[in-house]
Length: 122
Ligand SMILES: [Zn+2]
Ligand SMILES: [Zn+2]
Image: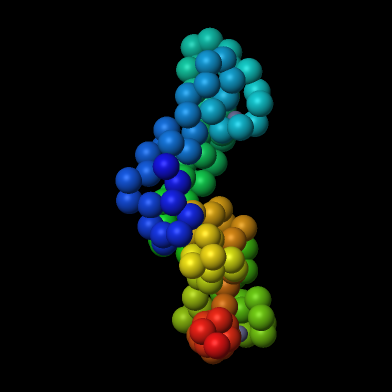
């Protein structure tokens, strides 16, 4: 089961996220499987699904790597580029944004991250 209110999904298995479907690719692309493929339509389907799984499971290394590819370490709020950027949940974990894909993450500098956190506490 996917738990949207936790940062890490320790007990999540790949099969919870992408159950094996008979005859159709498990990634959700809708492509029909050719023999001898049993689960994924292509290696790309498999790789993308593994990445998606790692993000939702809360693998910080993968999340930071993907986010850096998107934003190159530039804060989405103020635009400053810093080596100390932080991966921020756009929809906070406390509001159900825990088990989300990379689209729920944004790069923030430490100042903007602090400000966002403070505003949420108020
Ligand atoms: Zn697929
Ligand atoms: Zn900033």
